[in-house]
Amino acid sequence: MMRRTPLKRTGFKRKPPVRVTLPVDDELFVTIERVLPRLYRIPAPSEPRQLVSTPKFRYVRNAKLIEAYRLIPCQFEGCGYWAKGEIVGAHSNWEVHGKGKSIKASDDRCASACPNCQHELDQGKNWSEDERRRRWWDAHVKTVRRLVAANYWPATVEIPDTSTFPKEWS
Ligand SMILES: [Zn+2]
Image 1 (cartoon, rainbow, N blue to C red):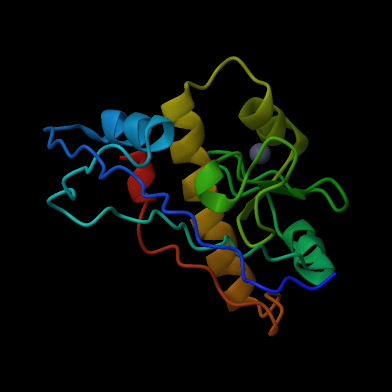
Image 2: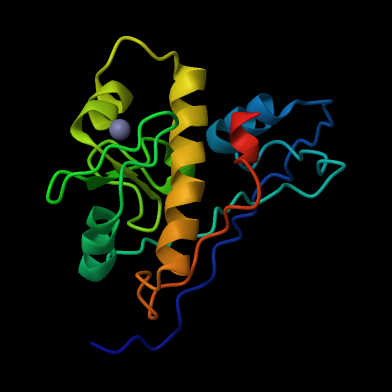
C-alpha cells in the first residue's frame, strides 16, 4: 500500500537534559556515565584519561636455545655442578620475563641449572623470594654471557638485555 500523504513527523521533542556539574572522581564518573548517560554532563577530567596499553610481551620459543642451556655447567652462585645431560635451562619464574599462570617465561630468560639448584629455585625452602630473584638473575646473566661467548647462543635469537636488574624487582 502506498501512502498518499507522508506520515506527519510527530512533534516529539526531547526534554533538554538537566545539566549538572559535579566534582567527580573517576569511579563516580564511570558510574554516572553508565547509569545516567544523558542526564548529566560530566566535566572533562583535567588530564586526558590515559589509555593503559601494555605492549604485547614477545616470547622467544627456540628449541636450539633450550638445548644450548644444557651445554654449560650450573651457573648458580657457588655451585658450578657439571654432568652431561643433567643441566637444564631454568626459566624465570617472574612475570617481568613473561611467566604467567599457565605459561612459561620466555626461552631467552633462563639460567643453566643443575637439578639441585633448580629444585631450590622452584620448590626449595632455603631461599627467600628476594634471594630467589637475586640468585636466578645472577645465574641468568652469567648463562647468557657464557653461551654468547662460546657461540652457543643461536644467531636467530636476539640476546636479551642483562645490563640491569629488572626495575620491577628493586
Ligand atoms: Zn647448581
